[in-house]
Length: 608
Image 1 (cartoon, rainbow, N blue to C red):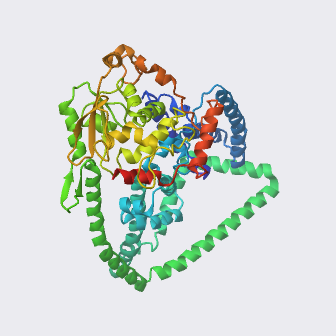
Image 2: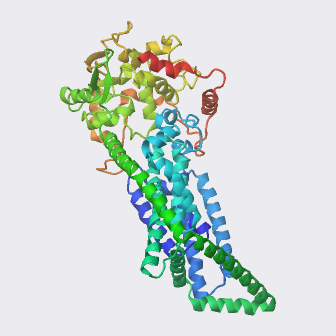
């Protein structure tokens, strides 16, 4: 789309993009969770419109070749076709909008354009990686490239080519999104490397390759190479012109020019001649200026100075290159290793390897039945499934906001109420403890997410400021009664779990993980959920099956109020949902009655 907007459309671009879009979209629609989202979600309408626009441009291009149209005629034909097509698309969109065909922008996409705690979705707002990246993050992941990539960016702006336009757009887009969301710094990796290479390549070319070749040719009395790459630029421009000639033959161009002169009369011919003469003068002046620069730039003394500067640059870059190479391998090794093991120091200064998480998952694998179901916050779902080989109630691929909210609602409910629900869903409950980023530190988010679906869980406060800790690190009444608080601090500070509901089964060596066995598990609900006949799949035998809750939980599930996305124009928001969103945004923005600033921090401190 950017190439077309800059007037660099070609038939090759049409073929490349059309194949990419058609094959990519068809492939994506074969994945059940994706389905027809590429042609329904608003955030994916841009590629579709670009595809339609490409077909329009290619049709006009075919007509230009066949009818030998002039530039003005081409533009008029584009306008004549674009206007009715645009009107048709607007009409179709308006019609489809009425029937709810289009999906809204997701909260995660909206989070790229607003502050990460202002998306209106407490689940998205709770993810730490949605915070904007800072200078430390850029330096950590890009190392020396972080400092030289901007120079490569500006060098790419100097010469306008398709390749340079791509790299400039790629860099600008990647930087914008990484500056909005820290996890997207990964997008900068490839383009930052390319921009660093641009700078190093230009420096090596201008400081070493060209001056050495220039001096060598003078010593050996060979024809001198161009001093500033003018020949290469001319060759590249010639190659581009040859490509254009494939689409625009000389005969067609001359014929259309003659036709314009014939139709325009003497006035048109004079205007065209004047314009051509002015352009020729401008090019001549530019060439003269470049010749003057080349005379100084190609001088032997200048060449020697450039070589000396290039030698110093090599001397300066070699050790930093080795440092960058070693750092890259260390970072790659660190990122590829399991993050569930780390070194720490005890109170007496002894360094230990904390392996609690792996040991806990292996305990689940070795000490629990193969059909055991584990309830834990969704953050650890993949680890439970992959390492413990046990079914997790939720994981990072749970796209159902209401299900995540149900899990948060259960964990932050009083233990007796929580047990009445958990016994129908899980055999064990796993919590992270021991301070730091444990479940107690995350607990305000759990309550907030649960309240987004179970309105009233936190009273009239959608930010759940009543679920947390006071400044003296004492828990609020709602926190003190919650299942999560009792599971994490069981046996400490006078906190105890009712063993008739949850029996302590395992604690890791350093207290980072605790596992409890759910008492009086409903065998009827477990068998019902395990029955394949009760699974709702998109097709017989498919792996994509939407889960169903046991009948015993239907009354509890029916009390949910499906979360109405702030941007979802397909859902008519009732007065209660509208009030919830307005109050949530007001309090998250620091409005009166909002959550205390110390709540989240106090939760983490209390967990220590």
